[in-house]
Image 1 (cartoon, rainbow, N blue to C red):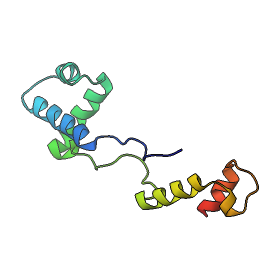
Image 2: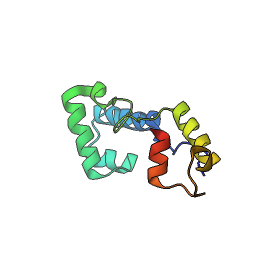
Image 3: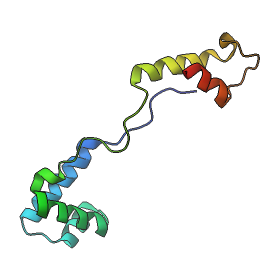
Amino acid sequence: MFTTLPPRRDFGALKARRMHAAALFAEGKSQADVMRLLQVSRQTASRWFQTWKRHGRRGLAGTGREGRPPKVGPEEFKRLERALLRGPGPYGYSTDRWTLACIAAVIA
């Protein structure tokens, strides 16, 4: 069923790319140069340039993560995985198939 957490973005590599863009802008490279060299969209190069112009390298450093923080931590995810692998029987359900309602009840 579940074997690992879903793949995550490599935030370090993303930050390194933005820092590379900042260095290129500091050297006087154009947005088009950055777009070609780093293989990013025109919009991304433009957004990076505007951020770099306003806030410098620090502005392109990023926050470290994107999106909403996960509600389930790694240990809780492992417990849920073990529970789901046991099947619904040990939780009082007569079926051998998980339904969303059953899973929600086990999580709660």
